[in-house]
Length: 214
Image (cartoon, rainbow, N blue to C red; front, side):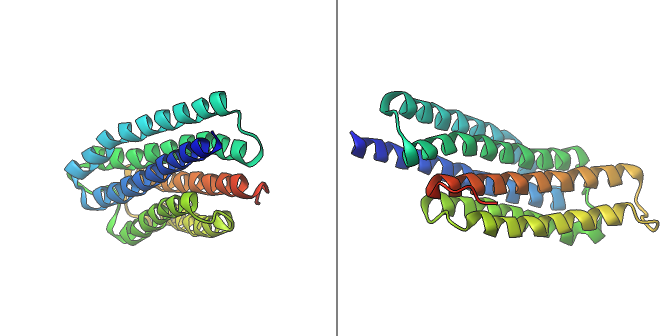
């Protein structure tokens, strides 16, 4: 019975890793759509968001089934509860990527991001999507140290967020107020995506070690 339980737990881990990979790809595509005003790509991200919702529901159903039928304790219990927590956060990361794609769709055919801020948003997209990809590794591998690693990446996202805000509030800002509001909201989506990724890494490390990092 315990062997079967651990097989089910591996399947649950597989779902989480797939969700992390999907969130990473959604963020990468949403950023590309944003910077290139690619409407079909933005639509792909928006339509694909429902898949992450379905994956979260499936993950939760499997976790609750394990809780009901196997009554896990100690480390196994932490792992199952962490899966429920992490699935919610990963689904939220997909929502945030969809918000970025939605902004790209509303701004079409013109890019929302001014040319001088494009490198900043390109880096935001790369850092955050890499954070989500790293979560997939942490699910299957050694989770210890993952929280510290992703916290450092989150600090870089915070720096980029601050750079955008300093730019749009500077006296020499030449774009209109609508653009300032749009890019301010966009950078907040990236920041929240990174925050959710750090939360997932923290819970994965706790599930693996029994110690809550931070």
